[in-house]
Length: 322
Image (cartoon, rainbow, N blue to C red; front, side, top):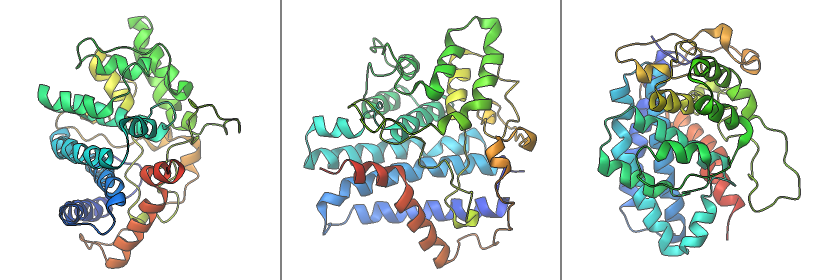
């Protein structure tokens, strides 16, 4: 049984296999001399992104939290290498400007998702220290700083939110009366996806304004679903809060975007399609995936093209190129 509201088990088998092989190939290539050293940091970061997407694909297929989070140590190592390569070609100030939570919604969500997965894993103290150092942005965001402070003593907590829409509602879950938290969490999960489709920002952007109005993956799967870009649309942020603060999440279980089985060993909860956001109910129905687990060369090329042109790193580097 699968958990994602779209795509069958054959799809997940195929693209999980492809994702693992693709990362292995990327790591091999990264270890060789490069003809374009300036591209190596960006290439290294794609490995981090691919590890994260692979973990979410494992969850979508119905795998256990143990299987889902097994890649976390490798993701952390890949991120450290990407940071090292990046700092070889730019200053620390420029580096953190690119990965500022306030201006980079995609990176903020990536950090939140990785944090949520780490909270549901056996990651040890050393792993947390390394991960938090990679995330940086201390004192930037009241919500995510508060969560990371559970693993980083004396962390500075921000006084504002980098992205009030949709995350003010999740902060409200943390700060409201305990007897109201379960319903508050349900409200956040039910509006999370729609609220991420934010209206265009004012053209006169300040230095603290997000460059993009919705996440790069927002419509992955609407078209050409069998091309491999779709990895699910999971509100891992809600699981992070439920886990850390011990909030009853039973009202959220079954929502097709709530990955509650990360907190329920041995359980595979089917999605309640009646609870899909209205915009996703308009998406075209699935077409059967090919049973070829490794995928065709055309499929691989298609996925590579799709993720390269629309991924968060492509958006980041193209918009922030020095």
